[in-house]
Image 1 (cartoon, one colour):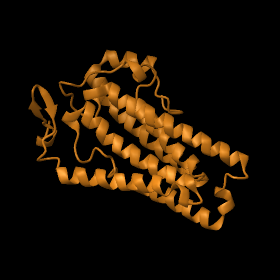
Image 2 (tube, one colour):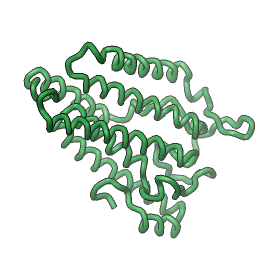
Image 3 (cartoon, helix red, strand yellow):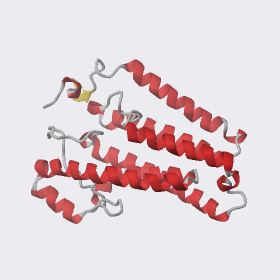
Image 4 (cartoon, one colour):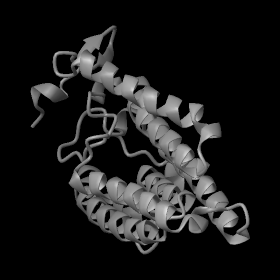
Length: 244
């Protein structure tokens, strides 16, 4: 059953969010804070020793901003103040706090470990991390754009009138490209920071989360689309290792 928060305002035949359920001051404040972090990440780039952390801050700010911006642009009927995905649960907060703490501790105690100046292997790891971040961000954003009004940050347990089974574009080679994109993006951030412990932790947490979420979501997708989804599932994988 839809709640009042789920019902958009229809203007000129197009859905827009009900601003009484999406406080504009919260949206503006969140975007403003993300802009501050983006500015600090760029502005302090030449004044810090470990520039990788600046890139991490930039990647985080861009990711959360795009989550809201793309939803607002391509799926305005479902955008709300939570679409930035900043308040994304305790596990999400713990993972980023743990990663930042690992970076700080290792940088303080084992500064040479964080250096890429004289370590070719570390340079390769950082380059690999940047590639994963760019790849993951592109796939995540493109998936949201391709799905359009069928995309939602929440798993839908009832089928809306605008919910269609998208099988084109990125969805022709991954059933859940938005999850695939975030999986590799997040791992890329830890490779960028040269965080070995967090990299392994992220693999475990992300795989566990997406494995359960995909199983839960596909239970309802099978109910919504029946044989069509069963055939699609058989033909197209996910792209996350060991998740069928």
